[in-house]
Length: 109
Image 1 (tube, rainbow, N blue to C red):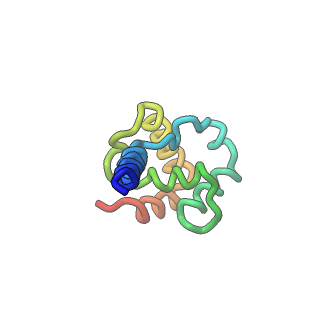
Image 2 (spheres, helix red, strand yellow; image 1 turned 120 degrees about the vertical axis):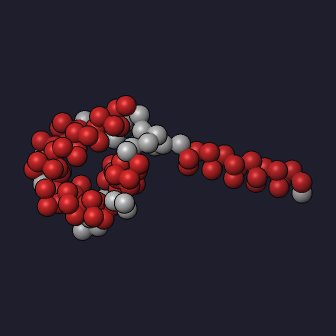
């Protein structure tokens, strides 16, 4: 019985540690190619604004937005910061109204 409890606690601790680690969101994405594809950009916009389906990269982006907008991307890798900045600049320039809606939805301060 005690070994079962110890195993359960160990699994719970492992799950907590893994979930606390920053994920690979925006780490291995070819941002330039995504931003050249208006259809894909629109899909990500719709995903982040809960207006359409989300694939894994879209879900990763949605999960990362609050950290990017509210915490200056704290805990992000240099590549995640670089890609986040590229996306934000692109959105501000090419999809200002959508970017304003995303900021309203995800920015808390």
